[in-house]
Structure formats: C-alpha cells, structure tokens
Image (cartoon, rainbow, N blue to C red; front, side, top):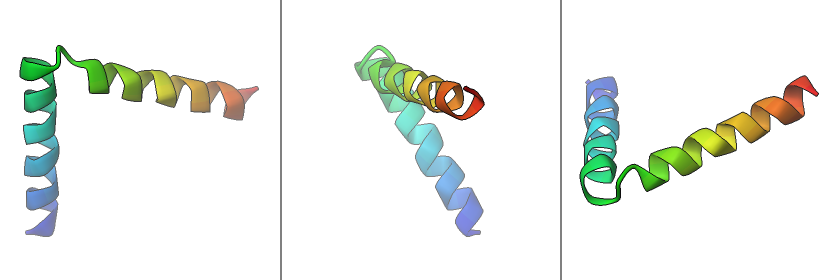
Length: 42
C-alpha cells in the first residue's frame, strides 16, 4: 500500500509541475541525472 501512496505523490508532483511550472523542476531533475551519469561513466 505504501508503494501506491508514493506513486500517487510522485504522479501528483509531476502533474503539478507540468501544469503550473512548465516542467521546470522535471527539467532540472533530468539535467542533474545526466550530470551524475556523465561523472560516473567518465
């Protein structure tokens, strides 16, 4: 049950970010992940 709650919270955040912020936080998160992957893979 707690996994369902976590998934719902993440989905609500993504919807909120997409509607009200134009995906700004999602974009920042993707860029951060890309930086981490570049550092790990060299």
